[in-house]
Length: 157
Image (spheres, rainbow, N blue to C red):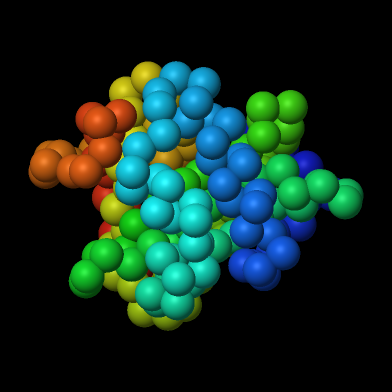
């Protein structure tokens, strides 16, 4: 896949918070329902992700925010979470660009391993994660009904 040359990756700003919720609601509601843990993150992404040691990235195409992904800290684990690209802009490489920015950030701050949670129905996302080096591992009990896949990526220096 060729990445779109006009897509830029930005880090969290308060003005982008509504896009974090809007883009994630769009993909979640296509096949699932919004869960309580989603709502908590949507209501205050700055507190639940950024100020907890994580980061949120946004993909911008010209003047439009078209995608987002979060690097979320859970205790001693870092998670690639809430990857979303607007329906009309899928296939342009924004998801890959977002994930690569997140992986670079994780590597730069010394994170050794990333995890992510997904669903076996999300073929495009799972293929992207595999392309980036994630491998499927055993899934522990999680707070999301829609999750049935766990993947990990070991980061090298």
